[in-house]
Image 1: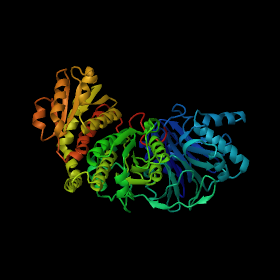
Image 2: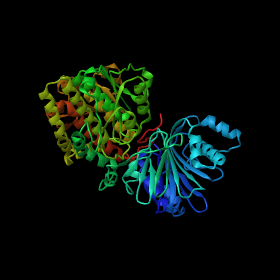
Image 3: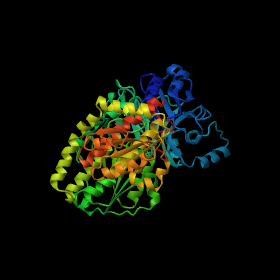
Length: 613
C-alpha cells in the first residue's frame, strides 16, 4: 500500500515520476501526487482518484518542469481520499515537501505539540505532521541531515520517506524504517522507489537501506547514514528482474499473464538451490542436528500466504512428523505461542514487507525461536530480519490478487518438507526421490490445465455463474485448504460472497445456507477421501445446489453421476495435487470478475503490499 518514487538526474522528473507511479499502481491507492523542484518553488500537483486524473491535471507533467522530484500513490489511512489529503505534503513556508508510506503511530501527540506552537494543518494525515516537525527542526538547524535525525528520533511507527528541500536543488533525501524503500543508481541519475518495477526502466543497480537509514541522493552519488547521522556503507546489488517481467506484453491483464507464467515460475523455483549462493541468494543453513532437534514448527502468514502455510501444516506433519501449526500472522503475537530454540517459525510473505508478518517474526526472534523467511523480494525487511531466507523466484507480481507467487511459495514448501524428510528419515529415500522427480514434472502438468480447452471451460463456467451472489466451496484435507484459496480469489476479484468449508463440517451449520440453485464448487482429488466428499456432494444436491466438481481423471466418470459439471485436472503425485487444483479456480475467478466488470488487476479496497497493521 502506498507507493513512493523519487528522481534526480538529467531527465524531466515529472515524466519519470508519473511513469514510476504507474508501475506501482498494483500496490493499491486512492489518490496520487507529484512534487518537482522548479527554479521558483517546490511545485505540487495532486488529486483524488486514479493516476490518469493526475496526468490530466498536470498536463502529463509539463506543468512541473525540473529534474528533481518525488511522487506518491496514497492508500487512505488517516483521512478520506481527497486532494488535500493526497501526498506530497509541504510545510507552510514551502521549504520542504515530503511523501510517506507507513503509519506515524504517535502523530496525534506530535500534532498537539505543533498546534501549541502555532502550526496549522491543511490535511487529516499523519504525514503532514511529520513534514511540519521536519520543517521546524530544519528552521532550527539549517542542516537537513541533522533535521531528519532529530525528526525521526521523535517518530514512532513505520515509514519510508522521500524528502525535498527548496534550499537544496541538487539533492533528494530518503529515510526507511519498517516500510519498503530501494535506492537506484543509474548513469548520472539516482532514484528511490517502494519497489523495483518503478525504476527498472532506468537501472537495475540498487541499494537496500537498513532500518533507520537516511540517504542523500544526487545525480552522481548516494550517501547513507544511520539513524544517528553517522555514515555507513551498504552494498550495491543487481535486481534479477527485467523490464519485460513487469510489463503486460500481449496479455490484456497482469493477472492472466501471471496465471500463465506459473509453469515457468515453478520450473525456476524447483531448480533454485535451497542453500549456497545462486541468483536467488537462498540461505537455508539449518544443519541436520538442528532439524533433528526441532520439536515444533509454526507458520505465520497473511491472506493467500496463510493458505500456503495451512497446506504446509498438512505437508510437514505427514512427511516429516513434526507438529506444525499454521497461524495468521496478525494473531501470532496475541496467541501466546510457546517458542524456544527447538522451534522453527516460518514466515511467508510475497513482498517481504507485510507488517503483521514482520511483527510475528520479531516476536519469534525475541523468544529465541529459529526463523525462516519465504519471500519473493530480495533485500526486503523480512528477508533481512530472518535467520534464514528462501526466495521464491516468482519475478514481479503486479496483479493485487496473487497467483504465481502463491504457487511458488507452495513449491518451496514441498521442497522444504522433502529436505527435512530426507534428513529425518521419516520417508523412504525412494518415496522422496519419486516426489522430487514429480516436482520437476509439475510445470508440464500445470501447463496441461492451461491449454485452450481448460481455459475455455472455466470461461464458460464464469459466463454461467457470474451473476450469482453466493458461491460455496467444499473439500476435505488439503482440498479444503485449496477451497479457502479459491474462495478468497473469487471474493477479491469479483466481490461475490464466497465461503469455503471442510465438507465434513456441512452438517454442523453451513448446510443451512444451501438452497435451490446455489453453486457449490466441490474439490474431490484426495484419493482416500473421494467417496466421503461425494457423499457431501449428494447432501447439497438434495437441497437444490448446482455442483461443480473438480476432480482427477481417475474419478471423473464417477463424479459425473452426481455433479452437474465436472472439471478434470491431471492426477499428479499426492503431495503436489494442490498446485494443480488451484489453477482452474484462479481462472474461474478471473473470468467471473471480467463478466462482472471488475478491475481484475486492482480490486477495490485492496493493496498488494500491506505495510501497516
